[in-house]
Picture 1 (cartoon, rainbow, N blue to C red):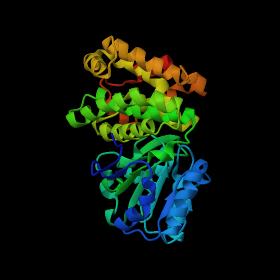
Picture 2: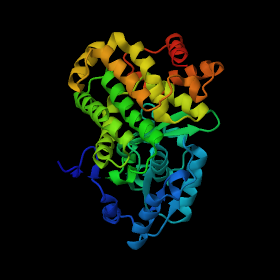
Picture 3: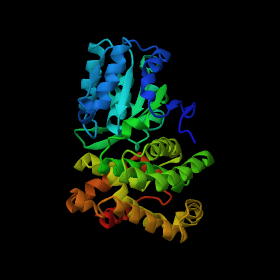
Picture 4: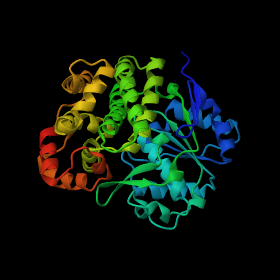
Length: 381
């Protein structure tokens, strides 16, 4: 089976090894003549980034680069990115990297022409309609990890550096116009990033599948996404050069982000404030929180995970699935407790407050309260 495809769902996706070479055609399709490539500091000097800048330059597109991006990007990074975009007279953004580079790149394109502050566009009600849609710049997304799925998302997560709260900024036109999914770009990922990003994709699928909202399309995508992670993440972790495993994980990441239109839940509601306060890796944090949340949600989700376990080839229904999740975490050296990631007990009240105001709460199958979220953090700590 050839793992190559041109898809138009949920946006225009060019999927397959080596397809980064088609970046100039993608720029032409969106009318970009002077794009700004936005990525994070860790990626800026790596060969995959330099090779991409060479492809741009050879096509007459310049070498515009902005890489002053933190692992949990914030409004200060965004202001600097917008300033670089406007100073360089750029006409579009190539968001390149893992979740941080993709999220910030999308926001640079979104905010470059806006006059209101970023927080006015938080994903609350119809706040997105406050934006001037006509000045949102075109976006190409190029994921270099297989995790967040931000390349197919209509939102970005930006940390408020003053309040340490992670905010979801949403607009339909933030969905990239073209996505280039080239699994060769993920071959150099170290094991801990392969694990953390892969388990982020898994968490997206698990939470979408658990959400009580009605969205059968997302439900089906979440189920197959879980299967791809189960089959291929261990292979990608053991052998980073396994291109089939890398490609299937890249698909699973896009599937997870497509599926979570159905909702996220307590895993993400916990993970967002932890990441904002302790600067932990998002996907790894999700993985640490997942066993406690599965146990907490069991009364509401056990029946549907009995069915999922059968499809995934896991014996023992929901209990077997939960045991599988812990075993998969352990096999990839994921910490068993949040305390191993530096999270401290005295922070729990503030983390609970952050979790209860996080938009992910609404997709949890059991209503979250101050009491049960406190118990969840204590269990995961």
